[in-house]
Length: 465
Image 1: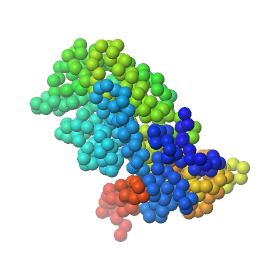
Image 2: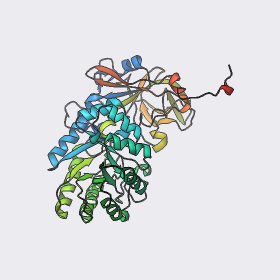
Image 3: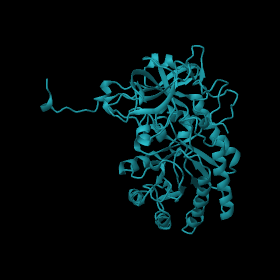
Image 4: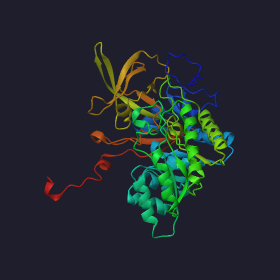
């Protein structure tokens, strides 16, 4: 499989663009958004909008989110479940990838639910109009305030540990309300991904270990206010393998029969997310359809083996929905040539708008959005503007010869870029625009210097004037 469909251009150029003839390809297998093209100005266009013009209008750094790519990924998930799973299914957008009102509203309009991991993400989802019963609240250390918020909102709670379970039982003891919950289990399955994003193996901060599950079932059976809908597991992120997911279905379905011994009728199975995307040409993730098919076939087979009815099947993609839908545009500034060592090209952003390279050693590709047909004649390090030697977006980027004022884009920045952004060095966070059919709409305003000090408090005794 060609992981990045290309237009008929010379590979020495940087026009790694989706082929418009390959409409059935999975968005997570592209490097750029589905609508990316080189226009007659030799500029990159996304969603029918010239990226250079977007930077002129909205400034940079700038997150540019392609609506068509996001909606296509949502639909491919839903259609794959409809094709391969005989029972009911629900796709949940893992909003930790990028939580904002516009994205929550888009995925909800595509009939997806949401998974949230904090009171702030829950609040955002509700303010975007997402139905509470379509929201699943995760987290390994929910506060009492967050638990009360979730109970009042009416969302589902994915219970992670004994403290949370016992706290819920106490909160509900005085009333007649039943709260729908799922249990997060640690299945003990490894997958080949970065050690910081492996969440399914036994040495993890998340979930109940297998030797605790029967005691948990017994506890729930004694507390009727806890309406245990089912169980959940998540084995990691940016995964290119399918076999771990097959293994996961077998392990998880076995617990349904065990729960029945305690009088619990589990009816939902949430198998998490984790499907990877293309960050460079070397990446070769499975398609959305292949990933969903693996889950569905695994669950059907496991349920037949255990002789139990098919549960409502849930999954929680995040990166594979929104990751490829976004590019980040930067403006080139200063350059530094260290003879026989490195050529640095500085941009007006870096680790504050994309902390993944310095945090996870993540690798990206760069494209000269203002010089799409120029030959890739330079190997450069794209340096961020922050006071940190490790603030390097890409160490070895293949680019044309660039000048100050040129615009470059980094693809695959829809997941964990804005959501992990910071104000390091008091740098305001970027704006974001949603592009579709030649129109750009602001979905996140650029922070101002005034925003940076909005929460600051200066005691009277410290005032200088």
